[in-house]
Image 1 (cartoon, one colour):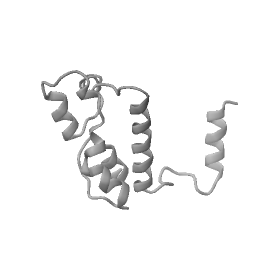
Image 2 (cartoon, helix red, strand yellow):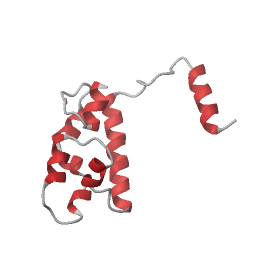
Image 3 (tube, helix red, strand yellow):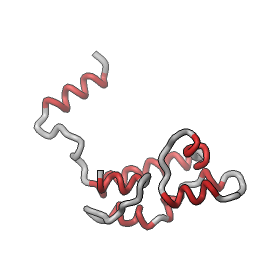
Amino acid sequence: MTDEVWFQELAEATEFAGDDLAPAHLKSKVYSSLVTSMAQSGPLLDLKDVKDGGGHLCVFEQAIAMLPIEAGVGSTNPCRICHARVLGERLRHAPIFWPGCPYSEFHNG
């Protein structure tokens, strides 16, 4: 039995099994920490490459991906300066409704 199957069976056997165990603001904080950690180990995938690969971008990331900017700027993390991150990490039910925004998905998903 693989670890994945064992953990799945364990989760199903508990009374707390489900997708909504963690509140949205905690999911937002964890997501921010993970992306920050990835950015510290090297450049992130360029936003144009994410879009070309079928990934979802929020309205601000799409704007950056369309700009004629120098290499490397598109591989930064625009979420670090976005007000959606601030709201997402601090409010239980943040009013964020942008398609492609991970913080919006946590709060409205």
